[in-house]
Image: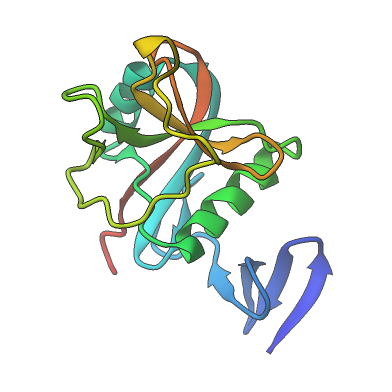
Length: 164
């Protein structure tokens, strides 16, 4: 049984948890390192410092991770709530999706299969033939947008939970 403390923070069976939707609760840290957050067997880290997409991916790699790959709406909602916890304005952040290798062939930086997308209406559009990387939290509906990879945005890294 969960009890609301503040906004998204809950206590569940003595562990601090976050509510994503309805009664869904997760252990915030699980077996993840400090500053990482646990969800469905993976560890997530919000990186507030704006970086280009490639610099953000290199930073994640230095942490034994990749830019986040998102595989369903539940995970998308978790990533959004993670960003919102650190950035109440919910500004756009880099995720690990790009078509830098071949236009229109979207790939996750961790090599996982692209089976879920959450594009904003009219996206991806490769505006100016220079948009090859993907940000989430775009526009008022907070969906995905292709963007020039050189632009600086915060980002979200993900890695497997070693004990999951």
